[in-house]
Length: 100
Image (cartoon, rainbow, N blue to C red):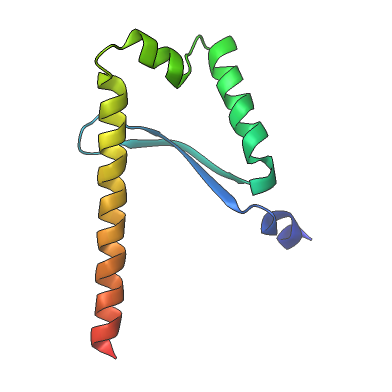
């Protein structure tokens, strides 16, 4: 029974703070949902952030940040993390091939 409940959770979500530390972003929360619920979940989180906590959407932030410094920093960190993950995967695949 419990397995059925978790089998439908096919989208991993991780909330990170990428602006606090240039070298190491903090993982603040994580969870999993069904991919079928993803669009509604994202809309609900955005609405909650703005209405309850006084947050802002990315388009609103871009309007206020003429130099896009917040966005640029977040994108740069995200790309760096992705690049590191790709390199790690490539190294693993290469090592597996060498070991054969």
